[in-house]
Image (tube, rainbow, N blue to C red):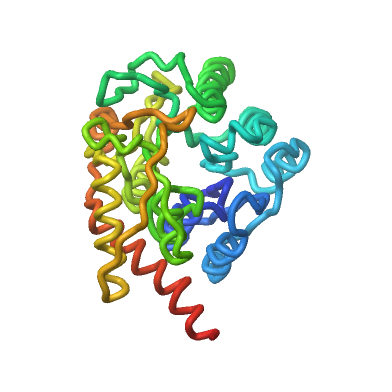
Amino acid sequence: MDKKVYLITGAAGFVGYYLSKKLLDQGCNVVGVDNLNDYYDINLKYTRLNNLSNYNNFSLYKVDLSDKEGIMILFDTHRPNIVVNLAAQAGVRYSIENPDAYLQSNMIGFHNILEACRHYPVEHLIYASSSSVYGANEKVPFEESDVVDNPVSLYAATKKSNELMAHTYSHLYNIPTTGLRFFTVYGPMGRPDMAYFGFTDKFFAKEPIKIFNNGDFENDLYRDFTYIDDIVKGIVGLLHHYDKEKLYNVYNIGNNQPVRLMEFIQTLEECLSNSLGEKIEFIKEFEPFKKGDVPATYASTDKLHKAIGFKPETSLKEGLQKFADWYVSYYIKKAEKIN
């Protein structure tokens, strides 16, 4: 049994939940932190937490990362060995509407985590960055060595800032830090603000889905969709892996197989049809590209493969089928029972 203490921020979130569950299943001691904000359906967060509460080796603290005193007390009490910072204000488009939330959570909150790791030394700090740091880079696939000085959203700017802050703390205080540039994570119990989830919501509400590609199928958006199990596998592989000579590191973690947005939508339609037992099709409305969106996200995962042998295993169809089955069971069949 691993007696180390793993502190995971954003434990009620999508990635935080699945990582916590994986570690708990392995017998690890997990201290979860979450402010349980209502950026999206809070009931989904409570469903995740209810699942985690079945483990004796799990404890949850409702603390906001911007509460420096609360974070320091938590570190002083539990003295974590490994910290995985997954808490953040997510969403590219929401950062245009509400920039203050991003500075509070992603900047001040992350600084407080770094300060806690400085005063209560940890073996390793892993934190969530994002593929959005690549901005409108036209060279694909994106590699960690690419210049990322041109973010096109405030969300991306805060994530790039996190990488710079981590680099500084690694250099000044010898803290091993690893940033993970996630590429469009999806799966059951995912984030409702993500396209695949929103499209599904719209279908059952009998509303059209909005596709921001101008109806241009030749120059459609490309996305590197990464299934949640592959993301967790990558994180777990890095928990105890860092270069003692180079304490600061950043890795892409993606599927390495980008697909056109329209292909993605067609696959989701097929998977929902399978789950419902009848053929379905979304009502589609095509609109111009949105500010802050990038035309393509495509990860080179060579660096991560070299480090820990990472190789994504879940196909898009397999992953979306698992999501569709969960959605129908969680929302539709449950509603039918109530009615």
